[in-house]
Length: 543
Image 1 (cartoon, one colour):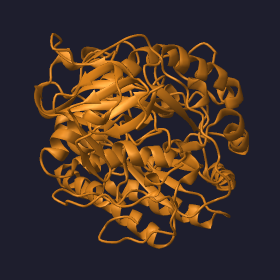
Image 2 (spheres, rainbow, N blue to C red):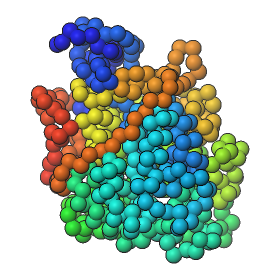
Image 3 (cartoon, one colour):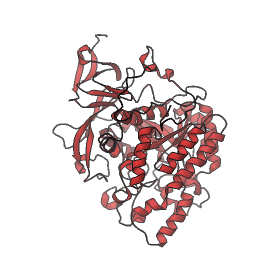
Image 4 (spheres, rainbow, N blue to C red):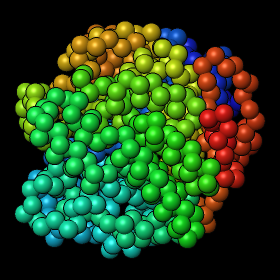
């Protein structure tokens, strides 16, 4: 091993990769992982961090967040990227419509005429990320118009944007007059135009031409049917939090998965489909069917759905589910039916205090609560500590798989040499009864308050420098240093490929030797990504 002085070495920790745990030190040079080796074999380093026996994980790659949804993008990124860094996130996948990224004055409610090309908004969005963000970030454009869909190839080549989201809740918005208040929830979130299946098909067609890492994301939830249930619930006088769950029952999510997986299958070429908020047993059945039919499909869930129930939760889209679905969701996450965890972080408009947002009547309650700060506490306490998933599986769904599906693998998602030196040190045994001192979001409150979690992040490192830590004299995680986030453009790798090879799920209690892989060979680079043929369900897992 070279004796060149390292910038940083992290010692006395257990490094976790998707395939196992290793008592190794992590050596860092020029913001990259330079070596994984026993401490005694490491070259000298300018800075030494003692992990104190804790787990050292790759930095979290949070694949879905919505800063700028209800307040100006720059304002939200200043505060919420700090909260994300304190939550262990080093890479943020920001999803936004064009009206929430541009330079125009912020409008709470937008109209069809406000929806233009992302070419106009991109320079301002990149500038915000690179001036105020405490995390690295990439963009997923939320498409609304045929014109935007037709420009997908330009966005990929010129902006480095290769993932595109279709917010299927807005299908009924296109035909609504601009002064119709019934769709204000979407228009207040920056969606002024709405989509139809023609826009969906155009987007799928264009993304199929991109090849890897082109990806179409959908939010599956049929609001056209949900409005019928909402009318009935209101008519019966239901105002409890459970009414929001009953308004959008399980089959409304599953129905969209079936319909748009079929459409993806009919699209010329190969278009990978990414499901956000996969939360119900009916949805898992549709995911398995689609994969068996040859659809390249990836499923994401979020910490809120893995923990909160309607009675102790909040208003969220898709709605929180009841206990039986939560148990099924953990099983689906462990077995590889669900591939990725993303926070779906949203904080509402100002004031974002609990008092301003809460209403005992669910129809008057403001949506949007801090979800990124739920991320690791839920996965560690409800998942690892309770034996539902292994620590290795946590790394797969929070780091490796989101990096692979977003086109960042080779740079983000692992602590193998050559990757960015992004780390989160986790104290898996730390018990935290959550109070306001543990909250870093601008809202200043959380549905976590009063609940006790086992496991918490204690230090976040971005490209070899500490960005947040729980110091010995601090009541909780706090940001460290000035913002130094980078925008992460993604590059196309060529023609359409067979399905991405996600890591085989590592289950609790399974002690497997580290398999041989492309990473073990000299000369590994992002271009040596391995692919396999079309996957088939196997023991509920993934090939």
